[in-house]
Length: 388
Image (tube, rainbow, N blue to C red; front, side, top):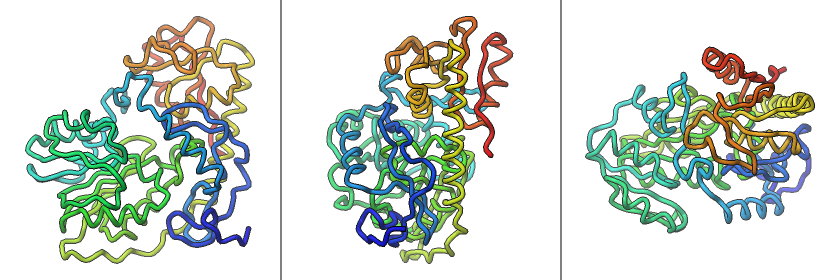
C-alpha cells in the first residue's frame, strides 16, 4: 500500500491514512447516479483501519464528479417523476414505500418540523406531508434552482440553500435520503445534522446496500458504499443513538432511524463492527465482471434487451458495447420513451424471439422472473449468475 498520506489516501469515514486499492475492478466502466453512462467508475478502495468501502479521491475522480453534477438531471426517463418501486409486485413511489417501512418500526408525533437534506424535487417531503399534514416541512439543496418547486408543495414552509454547515435552525426530525454516499466528509455533515435537531429528535438516513446490490459500485459519483453495520457506525460516530435499522424498508437499500439523545449530549459510539468491506468488495466486483461477461454471451445470440432503465440497466447496457437492442420497464412513466437512444418497452411488447436480461441482484431477479412469468409466459428473462 502507498505510504502517501495525502487527502486521496485518507479514509472518508475514519480519517485514517489506510486506504488500500482492490485488486479487482480496475477499468470497470461507470454510470452516473442520474443513469447516464460514464467511462470509468473510479478506483475502488477499502480502509484497512475501519473496513469502509469507498472510491479513491484522485484529482481525476474529483473532476469527473464535478462534471457529473454540472449536467445532473433527475428522473429523466420518467419525466421528472420519482422512481416507482415494485416491492412484492405492488408499485408505489419509493419515498412512500420508505416512509411506510419506517412507520412500521417507529411512531412519529402528529405535529413537528422536518428538514429534508438533499430534497431534490421534493418527493419525500410530499410523501411525509401527505401522512403528517400538521408538520411544518423544510427542504435543503446546495443550489437555489429548486426553491419554487419545493415551496409550492403542501406543508412546506421554507427552503434552505448554500453550504450545509452554514445552515441554522432547530427541527424535530431531519431526513437525509440517498445523500450520504455522495459526501466527501460524511462525519462532518452528520455532526451538523446533530446540531440542527432538538434533543430527542429523529434522524432518518437511507442509502444503497453494498451487501445486497453490487450495482452500486459502478456509480461514479458515489464516494462511499455502505453496509448496514457501517452506516450505523457512522451515525453513532456523529453522536446519535440508533433507534432502529433495516435492510427491508426498500430492497437493495439500508436505513437507520436514529435519535439525538434527550440529555443533549452526544451518545458514545459502540465498538467498530467487524470489518467486512474488503472481502465483500472483492466478491461484488467479481460478480459484476461475471454478469457483464454473461450478458455479452447472451447478446451474441441476438435479440437481447435489458430489463430496467435505472443505474444498473444503464451500466449493463454500456458493458454490452452496443449489443443491447431495447430496454424493458414495468413503470408506465418510462414505457414508450427512449433511453440511450433505445426504445423502452412494456414486458408484453418485447419482440418474439428476443430476451431481456434482468439487471438486478440475483435474488431480486429470480423474484421478478417468477412474478412476471404467469402474465408473460413467452417473455424470456435472463437471470444473472449466482455469487461465488
